[in-house]
Length: 179
Image (cartoon, rainbow, N blue to C red; front, top):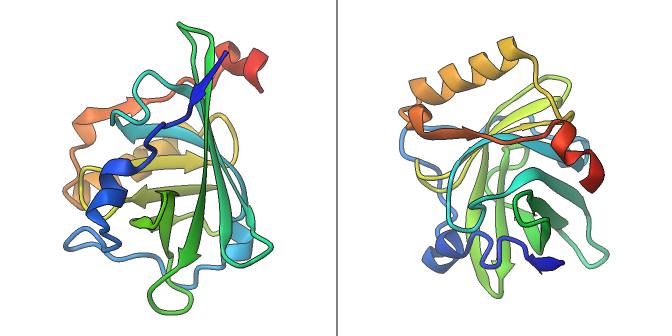
């Protein structure tokens, strides 16, 4: 069975139409979109209704034919055995080389997608929405080394994100059947 992923994926963000950065933060510079494309695994997040109950969450970024980036978010409600998928689009914003995108899963409404920390090899990323209510720790692999995870949590804490509310996303053996 399938349910619409993140049925209103980033709807709360999108309706606000806010593509800004959380106050006092800065997106990474030297950002190369083509290197960022591909699959990312969600390791941890601040929870929201559009991802509630979802594990095995991935985000796939690829070039769109017309322009911009195609975004496919996928997650699994393991208890219900239901897959959720949402397709969106994203476009770079801000200065060239800045790790900022505007993302839409809902019509003409866009939300900020801000890369606040990024591994030199593009193996992990710390991503925020337009404010401190939205935060994700992403990795190119289903597991992130504990030291890297702790570094990202500390970075988020230093930026005044509520890291005590982070939810670690199941990406282990329970996800094998859904990959």
